[in-house]
Length: 93
Image (tube, rainbow, N blue to C red; front, top):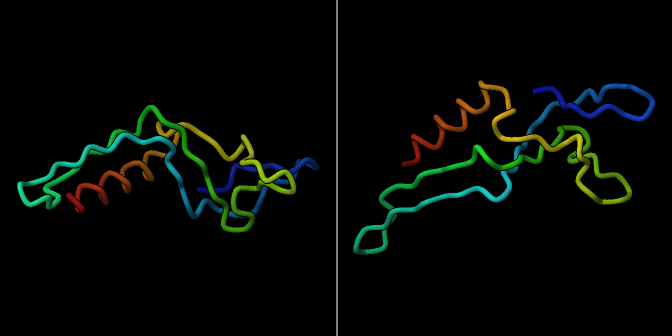
């Protein structure tokens, strides 16, 4: 996924998104009698995501605040990324 950040001079960042942080995600973990994890469910669709660029991280600059242009809703991620996340999590169950 190409980095969505556009600099004040109108130039598009050349980086790509290399990390996604899903904020306040609901995760339900199922345990057996010995407290071993039997499985889990992941419910991210109503939460926002912080994007991290391969070149500039979160583009926070001197203010050290996560730039709003680097935040999107989970459901707005490209379908291929959502599918890969869900595939990965299904293998971990």
